Length: 234
Image 1: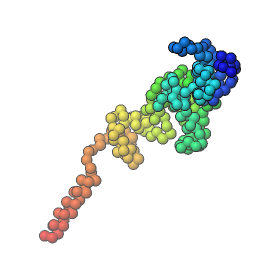
Image 2 (image 1 turned 180 degrees about the horizontal axis):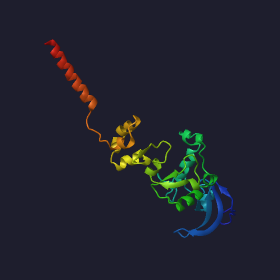
Image 3 (image 1 turned 90 degrees about the vertical axis):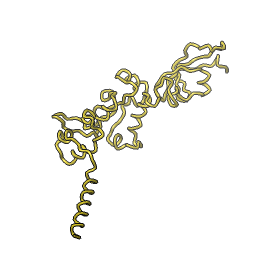
Image 4 (image 1 turned 45 degrees about the vertical axis):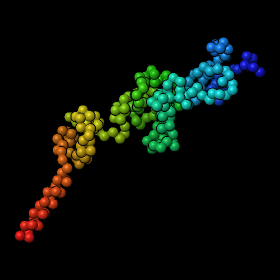
């Protein structure tokens, strides 16, 4: 049976594409008409229009979301990657499952099943390329009321491992204070001070002297020993 008489129905499935309805035919530059079909991708939940010929001959597996979405969602920092990322983190075989799966962190059913629904929420809630998805309450999972899009710095400051200090009466992430003080490169020294129990304001504000003191002291001790030895010989 030729394509002109081929009957397709809503719900028919070809790989991971499911027919929604037939739409207006498209005429190629050579003048040949092509039947076009609107399909829903069962991989990501998105909608796409494809040629019936490609569909029935199973030339298409998805809307393109697996090897690179046509809208750009699947780029290195694309929204589709964000969606697959949060789902993968909550799986038992994720390499850092102790941070998510073992703590009971899950993705809501609405997002788990449909990329399209996640995308619609994201675009309505401040998503821009370069931003990261963040759970406001780290003890809770990925669902609309608990998620937002933030910069990498804000995201880093909202982790279970974020180190907080009380600086000038305000509880803040240590790295934020160091950035403002232009002392990020002094992190190891200041963190060492804090670990030894130094008061927070003093640990940040006390000037860090330059020089390799241990080496200097070793040199001085060596010279002193040499002097004492010579003195003993005399």
